[in-house]
Image (cartoon, rainbow, N blue to C red; front, side, top):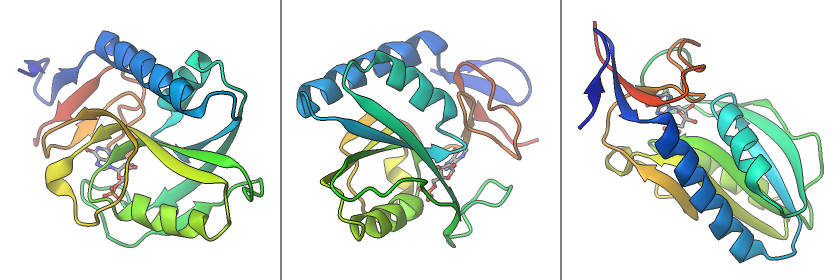
Amino acid sequence: MPVKLNESLSILISAEEIQEKIKELSQKIEADYGDEPILLLGVLKGSLHFISDLGRLLSSQTTVDFVQVSSYGSGKSSTGVVQIRKDLDVNIEGLNVLIVEDIVDTGTTLSHLRELLGTRRPKSLKVVALLSKPEARKHQTQVEYVGFEIPNEFVVGYGLDYGERFRNLPYIAILHEG
Ligand code: IMP
């Protein structure tokens, strides 16, 4: 049960639960990739804490790059229009690319990204998402590693924002209307 904090936020996933889950994810990723080097591709800005915490737990040889894709504007629902605001700095041909996403909601952003990056001939292309809202899915898209499946509620914290607020919270909370 979410813990009601104040008028607008209820904690859904605690900071400790997040860290535990990231440890599990890092172990699965290491087991799957073995000695292969990995390019961790963070999707800005929501993945900022996740890529940092996950990256520090991986003993694999990793490099990091970022892409910024926007489908949300500043509101609570997706506009459905995906724009690349910042492309990668590196050529991914022949690399093992692991997209690091904060949350998969409708799946619009991820399906677009997967399609785009797939054309650049990476050696492999996988996705790790801390959160997934299966009920909100409009575009079926593959997500190889999922931290938590959550209900179809708007959440903030641990990198996720509402109008650029709340990214700094160490936990994930449901943002209530009002
Ligand atoms: P999608 O394209 O609908 O899957 O949305 C993906 C992007 O929308 C995520 O990377 C987030 O930046 C944003 N987003 C989706 N759901 C939420 C939410 O509950 N809180 C904050 N941002 C969200």
